[in-house]
Amino acid sequence: MNTLKKLCYLSAAVLLSASFVACSSDDNEIIIEQQTPSQVLSSTPWETTGAKDKSGNSVALTDASVAGYVGFAYFKTDGKFAIYNLTDVLRSMGTWSVDAQGKTRTIAALNPDGTTIFTRDVEILVLNKNEFTYRIRPNSSDPSIYYDIIHTRTSHAEPTNGQLTLASTPWETTGAKDKSGNNVALNDASVAGYVGYSYFKANGTFKIFGLNDVLRSEGTWSISPDGKKRTLTTPTFTRVVDILLLNETTFTYRITPDATNPAVFYDIIHTKVNHKEPL
Image 1 (cartoon, rainbow, N blue to C red):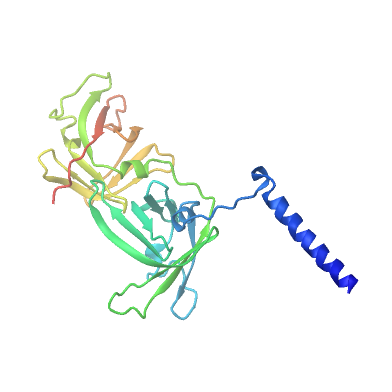
Image 2 (image 1 turned 180 degrees about the horizontal axis):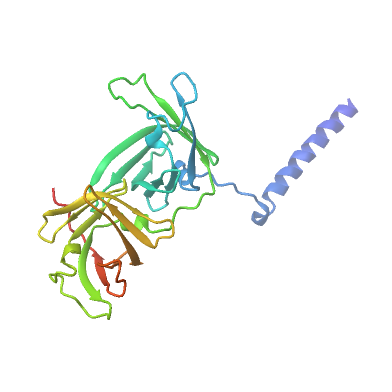
């Protein structure tokens, strides 16, 4: 009986001691803060590393059923997102959110003028610091068909070659200069063909309208990996220009009308504008 009492006293002493240590000083407490689902999603870049069909079979990331969801994703703390394909080409951008329960992620893909291209809700299956998996249902009339898109935490840095900046706003041609730095009127024949409102979309397409809102050209665009050249491709021409300045407010490139005479050039200056894309 004495042995049993001693064991009880010893157990009580241990418990009291443990309680005392935990409460003895706030400086010694270890507090683990629980992240919200939104904080988890924005805590790291994500890379698509796998996909499965409704039967749990692996689906190649190049398969047409899932290829449109593959890439590097950056969900930023300011509520904006950017998704690039696995070769670092910008694919979509806009705004995002996750519900408080971490069950649904919503993205709104935006045009340069801020209008919405599409809104997509997906069911979140896994969301932790290492994995983000969601379910897509391509055919809303047949929810039995679905694919699970698996993303893994990655250290892949977001491309900084200017794609996101160029696609983030409409641009208006507001000036031009010749090789000597003199201003050139925008209706001068040397530069008039480059003047207008430009819309470089995150899906790699573009439209350029004259200042009278008449469509002038459309096609695809890209920026070189080093951010020094912009390329436009249309059914009738391909044009590569040198980027001199590209930031949140100004986009300036250089044109050389005669490739055999590079000493003659013009710098075309564009400024961020709120002009809506003509319909």
